Length: 118
Image (cartoon, rainbow, N blue to C red; front, side):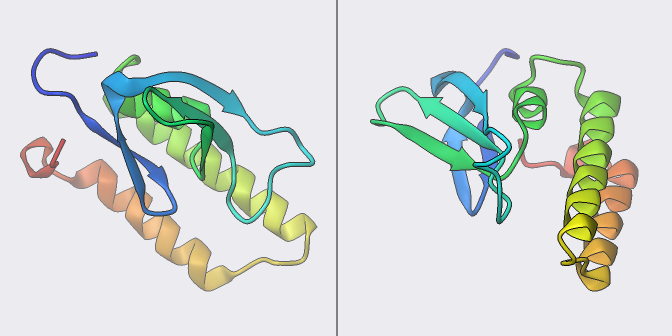
């Protein structure tokens, strides 16, 4: 992790945790995934795991354990592609949702670093 104050990490589903309190990540198995659930996150001081809608790679990138910029963008793009493929296979392809996610992903590539909160 980087120096300074502990970072808050977005897990999805409106959940945030301190990066320095996360001690384990576990990808959900194929039969356990659904409705956006992707990863079990184990956090110090919380009994049991928190289910996150982000992949373990995206969470690790947000924690600062990998080069942030390009790696995070690639992870987000791959996660979006995976969700689109799964939705198409299940017949739940939502073009409007895909457009919103793609716009957010593209906007994140042009944002000034100074505008980021964490």
